[in-house]
Image (cartoon, rainbow, N blue to C red; front, top):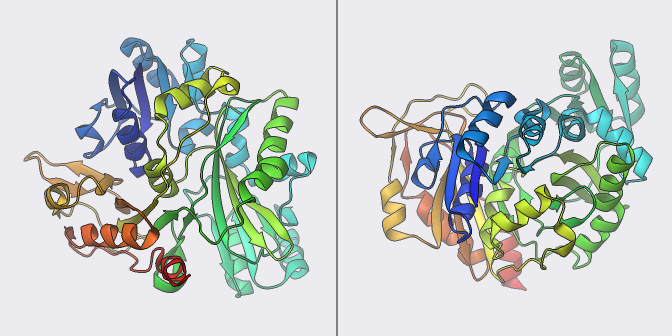
Length: 421
């Protein structure tokens, strides 16, 4: 199988890494990729948002499968352009991707499918915004209706900060605050059959102790020893399958990766948001634990044959990923700084720990430089969360990037609790 992956972040590096380990993958390509992906795939300088260019590349490569990683190309219709050429593609249509592209659309789908979620108002005027903020009270949850790279949500006790964020959006969803821990659950679907992956938890705030601004994610871990063993079955029955069924009923079937961001509240499971693609950094830990070869699973979703795909196999151990971010992330991150120590991780820690590149590039001399806000995802596996966490942070300690930042408490609480139990 020849596979083309679209995107250039740590999620795509995780996908490419897993695909490169799949014996059925005979050729692996990525557009545009990054410095790390270049080690496992052939890179192509194609604009990931240009559907026709991506389709031309896929056809020229005679790709058997195209995997669209990020949300923006999906909302832009890249999967449609590839599908129109008769090439199997893992990723929803532009219409179905509105499940992530528009919070208001997602709320409408959830209402029709009776999916449990937060009560909300869609607001377009200052008067509507003030009424919604007053109706729910603090803490205020304000979400930009459109794509915002994981940073379009403000949760605050400050009504003026909430109002300012709302007024800066063309259309905004204001909703009730959901208490309880958050869980990310991915599911692979072909539009009818839904196959859930293992749940993970990510860390959105920039600093230790869940302080600071929201980010695209500073780390993640899997499995969740504190979660109800029946959680996945419950979410399948009340969230994932009803949502896929509703989208098919509307004539916009969702084929690809359906990501449910969940709150485990005192009143039960509630959907915080849907994404139309693998989440970053949760993908890094979920794929680290998946033993089933990835290409066949994604191809089955792309070709409508998931119903006959064998049950997924998982490692019994744990995985932890720690994000190393640039100076001043998530505001205006500094780029162009050299990254040292990557070879040391390979020499000292592989294969139990490894580095997935997010925002990196090579200069003319071949040196790896930072090229984004989130620069690296250092991922490690182990027999339990404590071991995986220790390996991840040992590898983090080998990497040098001037002014960089990372959280030191990823999976710390749950690892300590699991060890104590």
